Amino acid sequence: MSKATCEPDGLMGEAWFMGETRKMYPQLKHALESTSTRYLQEVLEAIGSGISAFGLIEEWENWFQYLLPRLIPRCDEKFVYWLFEDLCTAFLQVDLATADSTHVTPDPQLVLQTLGCVIMSPDRWKDGRINVGRVLHPSNNNPAGIWGWANVSGDLAASLIVCLRKVSDEDLDAWVGSIFSIECPYWRAQLLTWYVGAQPLLSGKARFPSQFDDWTPKIGWSWSHVIGGTQGNIIVAKSLFPTGRVEAFRSAFEGNLANAKLKVWKDEILEIEALRSEVGNLVQNFQL
Picture 1: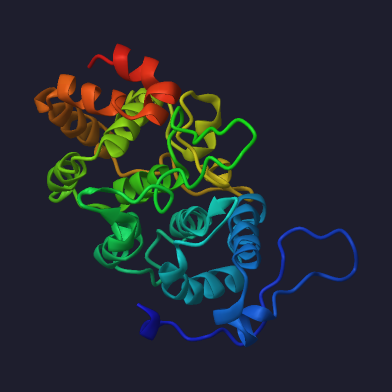
Picture 2 (picture 1 turned 180 degrees about the vertical axis):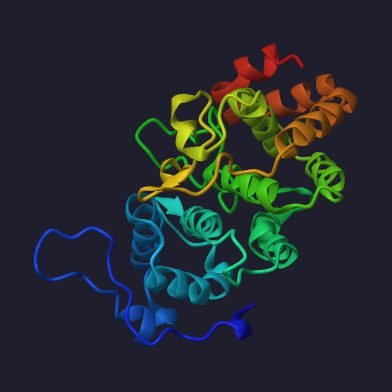
């Protein structure tokens, strides 16, 4: 993917500025490999929010296409949130804006094999379970000592939505099956939590992540609230997903849940103190 994109000639600048001078991001051009995580998040947030407010401009499109393959290897970095979350937000914004045939966009299968597989990187897993702190919720380093299991982690939330948009109809059942093949209680707890929180999406009442903030459990991620059907003053889509995709996904997801040994899931989840204390009620009361 990186071979297909060249470094843009000009600098990239911020989306929002009030004075005469616009902030630029020269480190992208001169020191990308040593650029801090927070700096890169600021760049991606400028792209995502800028497109929402003003529509896509060529500068942001060119820089994002250049950055995408080069930042995927850094998606395990975080500053408050995973860098991966901001990369997914910017990706979906650019993908919505460039969905017509006049733009050259990454091959969907390549997106799924790269951005779509970040969450499954080997260093995030150990013996079939998540490497706690390396994937899903990254830390309980806060005064309350809470991991955040009552809500869906930003990396899983973003990954599910990116894949749901880009997976083909032919591959959807196999993809959902792969989600359920993971025998990890942390993962399974997050799947149950996502399913409960995603009911407005699965029922067709909501069509974009910009509507996710109104729901609980939370299924949004960093800056997902800017992803909607309107960019600037242009309606770019009526839904983030192809016609019939969400309905097919719900059928496949619920089919796998129906075949799952939910009592075993619940018992294994509730054996882990952090899950039991933070999401135990949801798990105990979960019914399909």
